[in-house]
Image (tube, rainbow, N blue to C red):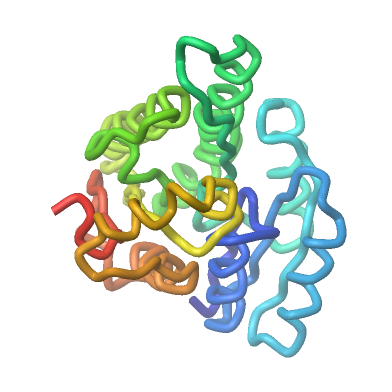
Length: 246
């Protein structure tokens, strides 16, 4: 990762945090966005001290295209042209569809789907100009592989992300840019903690490996897809789920 300038959206917690730290420790210069949890962002910066690569944080709402453009311009000014983009920012607003407030649907769509448009659109020209680049979207096995009760909004966005990745991969392949997705299963993150405790035991039984994944395991896969070793991989979805979707 030495010499790479990478932007990670939603990098203050969970998979995003693990990805930022893994990339920085591999020598990349990493910028990450966070929404409003300044203390969590500060923790990432503190843990990244001493890493081979520099890390900076930027507060922004992924739903806002103007803010996305500002973030990309700031990253270019601070660390240089963006070579790679990790689209990780996402939220859940779980609930049965019959009782789901409209704002819970709209908020998830605006964050998980409009957010990936905003940051890809704002940074893609830099990669096209360089005629090289890596984009990795953090989707989910809850999109396109399995359904999860109470996640019609979340599952819809994660399925859409996979369609986005496959279409964009074909658009930008002539410019040396690869576009891929990782689809984690149940990972030790805040989202897992939001699931009622009584439901978690049943979900664990459905995982052939019998355990949750770790954010660092997803980060390792993302790092591989950003590397030169993955230069002939594009338009793919790498499932990281302990066999859940097998």
